[in-house]
Image (cartoon, rainbow, N blue to C red; front, side, top):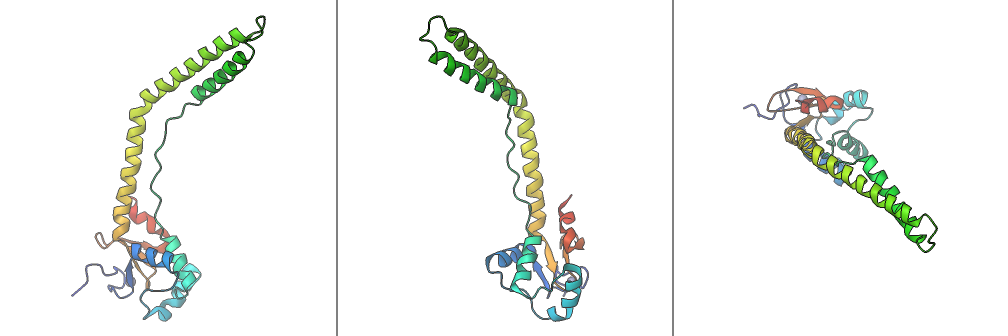
Length: 187
Ligand SMILES: [Zn+2]
């Protein structure tokens, strides 16, 4: 009889909705499309805990905003500031040097040589950092992605109960007030 996705607080499913579905409705239309019966009854309670009753389209959008999941982590790139700086300075010296090569008494040749040396050192440092930190970065990026995927796996099965203003994980029976929904995904 009991629905396996039922709310752990009220034991019912009639006011509960899958969180990703709330997000899709809230962001696409902004028009309230969730369960309506009982909302007026629980409106006062929702009003106190959240500042609004979830009846108007804007509140629906606000709910979706609160329930928006963390974005997929961006891949961290290895960047060596000294290497970049050396290559830039080297390139400037090469440019200045080659422009003043016409003057045989000028510092063109020296600048050119110095520019090449700096640029090569810079590239060398950059290459060494790339190869030495590659594994570390790959590992870190993979871990960040795996953590996010795990969060999303839990997120996708979460439900929100309009009656109790809580989010819950039907699989574990854990629940949190709306604003602490993210704790459900920290495992
Ligand atoms: Zn409930």
